[in-house]
Length: 636
Image (cartoon, rainbow, N blue to C red; front, side):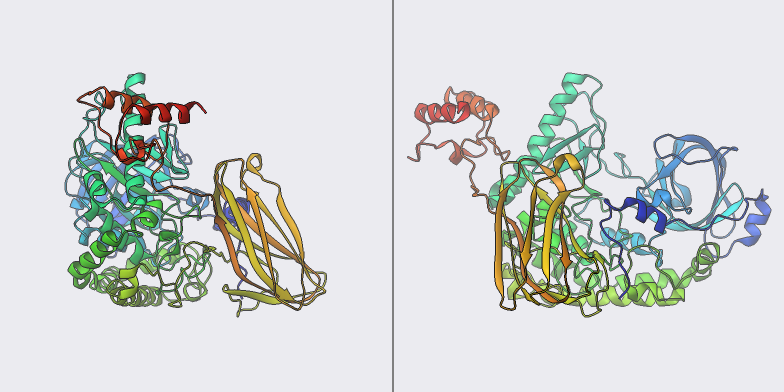
């Protein structure tokens, strides 16, 4: 079995080394005429960095851009722009991605619904089809309950006269009447519009809800107190919206959330089997006076079966486990909570029936795009390393292809199979009843699921089974399995359990560690192996809140060891109604007490979003006795 590299963040140095490419041939100063003579099928963008090297994503540098259409006609003469690098792991590959801004709004190649200043050039280096992002954005355009999908077009790029290959020119995600047309009034709080990204890597303008970070991408007030009120307003709105989904309150959810956009967003990400759905690039927006909307889609180069790390993600069958289990850092709470509601699953099933015939054209879209621009796509790999090798974490099936057409056939066939499986599943009794099937059509135990990752060192046979982990351990050879990433919360209790049997000469050692040492917890043990199956169980409490913990197993000795029913779950008792949480933001604090006090005094502006939480006397009435109990609960 191909050796698969481990823990992305923990082994970041290995990751960076894996994506370095041979140095480019020396750049040459090409005349515009020579660039056009080389043109094949696509538009061309030529970047002149004015003698400076673009090697930073935090700072823009002055440059110039020239754009020709697919017929070689000059579309945008040499124009001043500001340019920088973009991306995270791809920053360390020699085929760079760029973000650039015009001084005045432009609509290059007419790909957008209108002009804008900000544009991206995506290298798509980790996607050897070069089409996954484009395909996902086209899918988003089909699902029109999301108000905006990124417009894009494949182009060939030159930097300082040197050919760089095929890129995806696409709109930058920002507030713009031609993109996300939400209100921009940063001097207001509720009267302002908010664009948010749920992400694990965020700026200073972020807040945290339910152990997930939200980066505010739209402009806030320059007045510090107003900016604080804006953060508080939108963070409370997010918390309330999540909480009503968790409490399965349909009426309140429909008041706060644009449910059709959430259903479309879920369908799109489920079809793409997006493994990063809870890690980053998950966008939401709220307009002034409007509901929470889930759009646009972004960053799919490692989706659509192009990531061979998480169990089952290479298969066109089965539900995305991160959509139904909330224990992993890649899990998406919006989907996990929404899918527990019968009415949301009914909305998804009904919407699928409306759009399925439209969505079934997606494989043809992939084939047609590749056919139209085949020569340009193939030339990309003459510039960079050839096909038929592992570029990143793609599957064995993808890495072996030596012809570009093989990538296109495989991607379109995978999408066809995925649509066929979803077509049966969304209309099934299983989905209606909330039974979530994995890639083997076995029900996922959402309460005890353990998201296994293919993070393996040692000699592991190709028959490795994640449902019944077992293999021969060589004597005196270090073997390790690592399962990533789990979040723990301060004050919560967790239970680790598994069944184990095998050769008595072997023993299992495990530990739980965090990506950052300051959050480490001292949970480790040695388990001796016996021929008879024994059940191991350990409960522990976390004293930190952090989103990236790893469960690591090492083996000593020799012989076959079998591990089954592996589970790591939160066993902290929880309430669907949090006592005292009258503003319905998922927690009880002073703001709830003040709000309830105002409501009792008859304030016309005091609204109890969750009146049941105030009934601490449990007598189905709200009065001063409940207020006294709320005060007692608050102070101790």
